[in-house]
Structures are given as structure tokens and as C-alpha cells.
Image 1 (cartoon, rainbow, N blue to C red):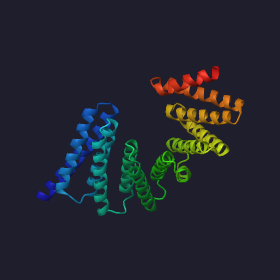
Image 2: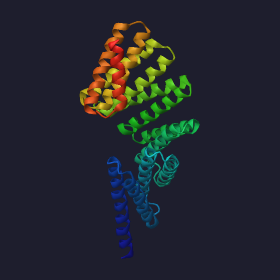
Image 3: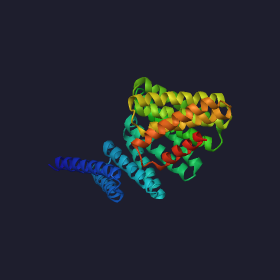
Image 4: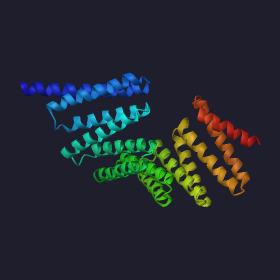
Length: 313
């Protein structure tokens, strides 16, 4: 009888934790941040109560790790960076506990990789570059481990591509240009693997376009203008594929517009003014349509207005 009651209590506590975690995610989307934080914290407490009854339950450990990551992302959004870092680090420790119990679980490995990636982004924001680089590299290693178990998982491939792209951005910032270029190129190859499995995934297409754009910016910085042009042109083609699938996506429209501006800038540098003007006009069209969809984006509005002034002159 006690065993049955314990099982019922365990299920109830886990379900309570899941419901509170879902509530935290919803409240975050609704920008009710104080209540969201409270929901995440209550969910973590519910999972901890459940783990007293079943300390080796890998599913509850995984759920607790996910709630800690959600709390970390919320705290980072609220610029409470120290507490966000603590939440991420605790989430990693919890996933490691789950992996001791089930080391070949690709879902837990993917989750651990995701929180390492989030930690890396936070550390880069705090200019702790060596630790950020270490977090990105560890996340890539964890995704690779997950892919040995689930080689055809497009989401894990996409996540690995994202981590490589972030590593490329960081290395370029640190002027380690050769390694940055390698990271970007590897990220593009990984996205291409994911797109073989899911050719119509607009998010993966958008991510591939962004990595090509980052590679283009790096090559332009190195004055490798023809290679930069090729990267930008391929990026624009990829964004066009994504826009066929989701034509009203302001994020993709903005990315395409920014890439067209960069391509135009290189063409102007190469005295190809007619081509530059064509690309700037195409960028103006993309950014203007994006503003119709998301009129409160002041950054894009200012960029569009500056571009219009350039073309008027």
C-alpha cells in the first residue's frame, strides 16, 4: 500500500513540476516575469520533492534540468546575470546526474548541450571569453556524443550547427580568424546535413543563412572580397528558400535585408555601383515589408531610414 501511495505521490509531484514549468514558459511569453520566475522556482521545488522519493529517476532529473535552464534564460533576459549563471550551472549538474543513470540517452545529451550553449552565450555577453569558448566547445562535444546515438536527429544537428556558429562569432571577435572560418564552415556543413533530413525546415534554413552571412562578414573583414561576395550571395539564396516557406517572417526578412546591405557594401568597395544599388534597393524592400509585419522594431526602422537616405543621395 505504501509503495503504491509513494508511486502516486511521485507522479503527482512530477506532474505538478511539469505544469509549473509550462506555466513559467507561458508567463515569460506574456512578459509577466515576476510570476514566471515564481512558477519556475516552484516547479524546481516540486521536482526536488519527487527526487526525495526517487533520487534515481532520470526523467524527473531531466525535467528539473529543463526547468533550471528555463529559469536561467529568464534571469538572463532580466539581466540578473549572476543568478542566471548559477541556474545554468545547476542545470548542467542535474543533467550529468541523469546521464550517470542513462549515459546513452540522446535527449538528455541534447538538453545538456543546449544549456552549455546558453551558458556560453551568457559568458560571452559578460566578456568572459575563455569560459564562453570552453562552454561552446563542450556543447559541441556533447551534441556529437548525442549524434552517435541519434545520427538522423535534425534538431540535434541544428543545435550543433548553432553552437559552431556561435563559436565562429566568438573566435572572429577574438581575431582568431582561421579557427573562426573553420567553425563557420563546419556549421554550414552541419546545417546541410540537417536539411537533407528536413529540406523544408525554415528555421534550419534561416540558421544556415545566418552562418553564411557571418562567414561573409569575416571574409570581408579579411578583404577576401570575392569569397565574401559568394558567401553573401549563397546566404541570400538560402533566405529566399526560407521565405518561400514562410513569406511573412520578419526575422528572415531582416536577415535577408542585412545580407543584401553587406553585399552592396562590398560591391561599392569594388566600384560595382550599379550592382550595389540594386542590392541596397532589394534590402530596402525586404526591411520595409518587415516593418509592415513588426512596426515596433526601431532598430530595423532606423536602418531602413538610413538606407533610404543613402539611396536618395
